[in-house]
Image (cartoon, rainbow, N blue to C red):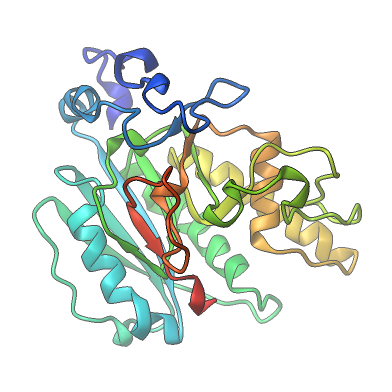
Length: 287
């Protein structure tokens, strides 16, 4: 894995990221993390570094019920074409019924692994069931197989290259619906009884639950906190949404890289001029 190679020196942020190229948008957070917009990054500089390390990137996706028939094949086929092109990629497909798996054809450097989803009758929330299972598989084998891991919802279609500029220790996706809105309207969890609570006047951005990335260790960290939050809330008879717990976690544990809404755009909205190059279309109608 890439941590063992000491020869290739990681490029400095300024070697590959130029925030001044996009004066029309916010390109750096208050904690100096880059926000990746089309035009701000030089992928070639990063390619040179990552190619020498021979990295492997994991992409985990959960498909259940109607989502399997409706979305899984186009998700995998479009990811096969556009996700981390030219790198070793392992798709981790978490399913309850492997017989429902559609035909999948993958290009070179791409493999997939099927992971059975085990349910506990106590928990009905699909996000919780998925994260609980993903947690088990990261600990069992994923952490030893990949350098970086993304977890994505299946109701998305890759439209353009989603490349190594998106890799980082902890990667968060800005929500297309809320990016151009005012912070006071963000749909954070506002009940002080919940572990996901963010008070009015606080919070940085509204992050989208459809994409989460980072090192396997960082993804594990989030899942542990998320599970703790859900369990604590359940004990006091409270329930919040997965995205609320994610936003609380990222408010406290600031991400090291943020993906602009170009990386996940809702095609039901006409893109404003700031959205120059859509990488993924999110099929929001299905929710």
